[in-house]
Image (cartoon, rainbow, N blue to C red):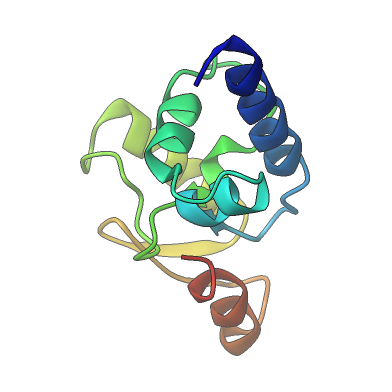
Length: 116
């Protein structure tokens, strides 16, 4: 991608990211697809990884297609993401999001598992 498409990619991904409601999660690939860049899941991951630590964007709501936190367990990034997700009601077992206490499991499963 040249600079103009990179800027468009970043702005589209960050716009959609900013609109993910509290209590919901989305997969990297689904976020890329919604931004108009299907197949760019890894680039979404890199963009999330490079956001400033004090960003107000809900980066923690982006997980992999298996509904897992992508950071290695017990790393700084993993612990920050886990803490934020738990504050929003998510139950996390290891790296996997089990369910959100603030929504019914069936409703929650439909919102996260369909995003691949």
